[in-house]
Image (cartoon, rainbow, N blue to C red; front, side):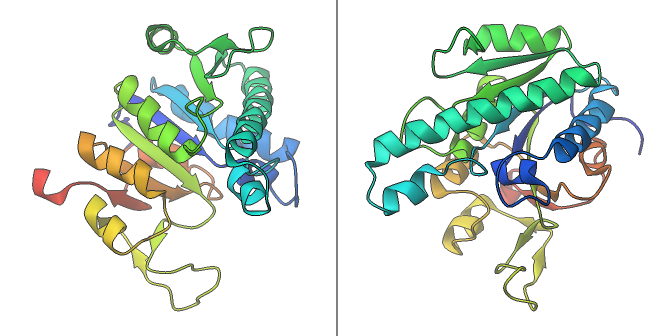
Length: 242
C-alpha cells in the first residue's frame, strides 16, 4: 500500500528516542534520521503534529521521587520538552520542512503560544507542528498531552514511537519470553496495567475513541508504513466500536 490512510496524524516521540546511542542528551544523528522519516510521510500529503517528551534531559517524576516538589519538577520537565522541540524543529527545517513550535508555557522569543485554531491553520498550510511543554500543567505526562492535542486538532490517529515493536505483556528488554500483542482494547491495557501509556492518557483516548498505534521507531520507514496502513506495531482501540 503506497497511499496514506490517515490525513492528519499526531506523532508522539519520547525524549529517549532523541538520544540515539547516547546515554544522555540529544543525538544529532538521531535527529536527522527522525527528520527524514517524518519528511517521507509529510511528502505523501499527510498533515503531521508532534509531541516530544523530555526524559533525555530531565524527568519530573524521577526528580519528585528523590524529594523534589512534584510541581516544580514537572515544570522543569516541560522546559526540557521545549529544548527537544527546538532541536527537532532545526532538524526538520534542515531537510526542507516548514515547522512551527507551539508551547503551552509562554516563551515567545523561541516558540509561539499554543492556540488550537492557529495549530490547525499551520497544519492546513502544510507545516509540521510541534507541541511543546506538555499540557502546561504539572501532574500530566506528555503521553496525556499527546492524546489531548490529538483530540484538539482532530487527528485520525495517535502514533506512539518506541524502541520496541509495540505492546508486550511484559517488558521485552527484561523478559525474553514477553509476548507481542498486535491488537488490544483500551480497557484491557488498563486492566492489565500495561506500561504503554499512563492510565490518564489511555482513559482519555478511550473516552474519545482515539486510535493508538504503538510502533518501533528504530526500524527505517516505519512512520510511513503506519501512515499507509500497513500491519505493524500494536493497535489500541475500542473493539466493540469496529
